[in-house]
Amino acid sequence: MSKRLFVGHSHLSRDKMEVEEAIGKRRAKRAFMKSGIDSKIMGRLVEAIRLSASCFNNQPWKVVLVDEDGPLDELRESLSRGNRWATRAPLIIVVTAERDKDCLLSDRREYFLFDCGLALGQMMLMATSMGLIAHPIAGYRPEVVREVLSIPEDQVIITLVICGHPGNDTSLLSEKQLRDERERPERKPLNESFYLGRWGVPFK
Ligand SMILES: Cc1cc2nc3c(=O)[nH]c(=O)nc-3n(C[C@H](O)[C@H](O)[C@H](O)COP(=O)(O)O)c2cc1C
Image (cartoon, rainbow, N blue to C red; front, side):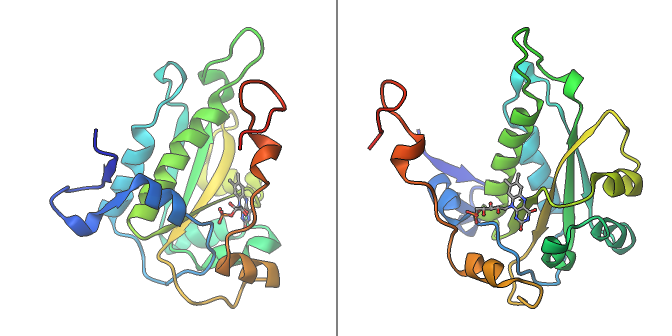
């Protein structure tokens, strides 16, 4: 089977990227261009979430795409100080889910966050394959987001995904953020997290 990820029309060669290439290129970047994202592109991001796997096919996610100046400005008020860079992005995707609407197994395993993470991972690769930044954040005040978008109380506001075209304006970035912009933050060594056969035997 082909391992190509076809995005959109497969006859357009500029529109294709290997899955492995998208995984390698995906980065939580923070410098954006001003230009917005058109609705067709947003549709493709939405479809990447919609087609994701989920426990019992429950599809627990609710997704609000915010790209208009008024609501965007209000949403920007929710951002933590360290996330001021995100005020420059033309699109914020708010992802919520309701705990009780997803698989709640008897041994207290919950899957609603897992399912949303899977779907967003897929969406972030789709964004990368189209040359976009899709950067999830946890640094915001959920009560402000809830109020601005009238999100019901039973929804957990899981993340805001900050989206846009990559740009050169780094004026709102800290020193560390500038470093991260240039180089991917370091990963733990393989043997710390990956085992082969049984717990503690390093996967080399
Ligand atoms: C759930 C989650 C929350 C995050 N929250 C923030 C955040 O509030 N601010 C920020 O600048 N980056 C945030 N990030 C981005 C991570 O810092 C970034 O993914 C990590 O440093 C690895 O860098 P890379 O994605 O470019 O490989 C978050 C990422 C995830 C998955």
